[in-house]
Image (cartoon, rainbow over all chains, first blue to last red):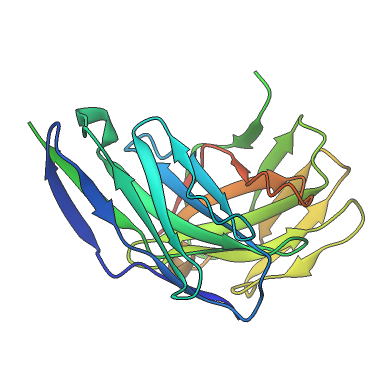
Length: 113
Length: 114
């Protein structure tokens, strides 16, 4: 089975600063997808960003960007100019086409005003 | 708005009671999933349905049954609830095409078994 590891159960960042959340995964496949989901206190799971493994260019979505290191099987999320609304649980997920998603255990992000 | 609708949002059961969690999606997705979320354990797959008419076990299927009623609906049933099934349950759906569109999640059901 695939595994996804988030080694930081909790992180904090000052408002307007930058924070990086870590994620590593284990796979023998070469073509897959990686995702970051955000879960605020409302409990709703929200897709933040997606990366295709066959693309070398790192994905970006406004203040959110990833550092995808395929050889190292690492997929970190960088949040720039952190805002109070970024406070949430963040989940990293791995997906192989035609198969299920595998999730990490999550990182709880606190944004300090 | 298009999306995944889960009912109920909250439920308290007594040990041994049964209940069904309902899930419906209106995005014409072919695949649907049930996950449970527990503190420190992320989301774990209970059952999934890759397409209408098929269902398969996930990582933690014991104590649960599912029904893919049609393309839109995928229900999760607890026949005899146990305190270990206290959790937050999420339904999700996906196209599972090569585009890797990701899951669309329902808003979750917080279930407490006492």
